Image (cartoon, rainbow, N blue to C red; front, side):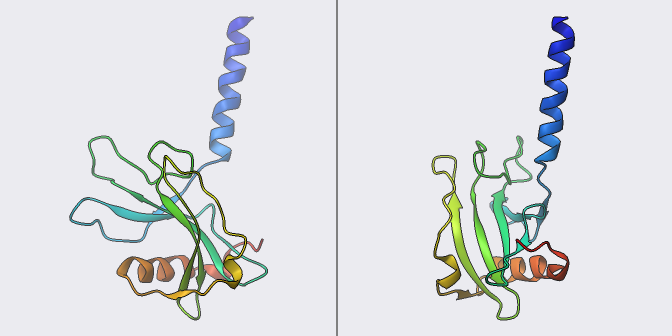
Amino acid sequence: MRRLIALAVLSATAAASAACAETWKPYSAVSDKGLQWSYDTDYSYRDAASGKVVVLQAIGKPAAATRLGPSAPGAADGVGNVMGLDCKARTVVIIGSYTPSKPLVLSDTWRSATAAKAASAEDKALVSSACEGADKLPTK
């Protein structure tokens, strides 16, 4: 009986993990330090109020002996941001940031914040990649 209960708990845990799956899509080149930016395609959506595309981006070190990130908030190796992207104007605004020592806190005023032009290579690559299929994203 105990084995049956343990098996049921493990199955439920595996199903819950699969339901919260993260699909990370790299959008930057691997830097000389081995770092690469990615965004979670499962988290991406179009904000109904602003029309902006909202993405969860994180940094990882894919070639490390023990792969590090990209990971969502709360993970031991999670470092990243939630970004609002204006695909037409090619601007970005940070909605919130996280690290292992700092939980994700989202700004309540991000929709009215002044967005910055996507100027860095990483921001330009994020806008290009995340906006590519923006018309197919769910609206929330």
